Length: 314
Image (cartoon, rainbow, N blue to C red; front, side, top):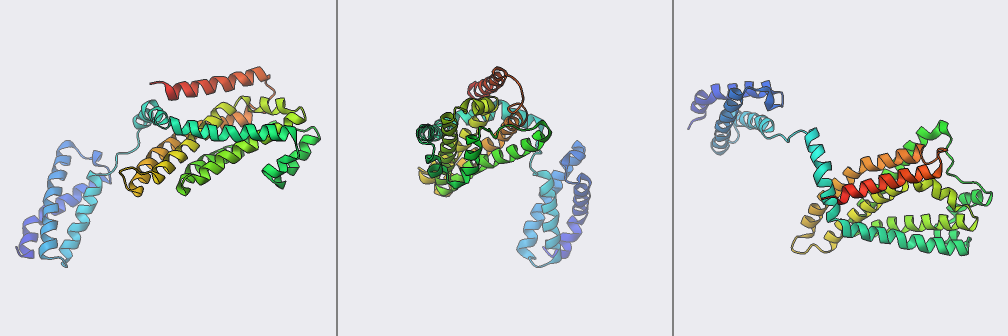
């Protein structure tokens, strides 16, 4: 077919398709049912015309025109479904707990990798306080000086609690993503995050125990600790899960295994961000408050039990 005949035959349809596509402004729902049907029919015709033009007239301007027209219409017809509250609701009601249970062995491993160095750090520093410098470096000296003076650093003045909560949220979310991103190092950085954070917490509790001040820190972490630590263990579990797929891809290629597991890990990490925000708000406002410690314990126990019931309930 000659180009002039093709244009003469199909020009009216192309112009109508262009008009309908422009009317949608990127959203096919703007069209009536009849217009949407017409859009689909004209799109199929234009696609066939484009294939013919690319074969017979690859360098003609009409081929470029059709390519652009088909591309714009394709974006309208096959655009990704917008994020809706129903999707969000379904994720948190069904998918998030299912994915958590799937990764439970890895999350348990992350918990153990955190707990063991925490216990070691606690008992070593409790018996020999100076070893805290060996374990955590000279950067800890300021904190040690405060403890030796009988001061805890956990007292947050009411006037600065909003700023403190923001800082805490930023730090916690950073740890969350670092623990997950460590999977790309074959899990080595994830292991480092878990081991070092566990060792640090245990060593600090050991130092406070030596100076008979550990109940003060324990009271501070009662309210936010269960949720915050649970989410950190989840992030570590995601990192180990992805790293395991990278190191042991089974029948998949390493790239395919990485992509498949990373999709699951990213969903869990993003799903856990609101939980960590909630824990950060508790840490910024409830933990340093003057509430009696039994109430703080009740907040921590209640939120921790509710979170794990939600994750494990089938």
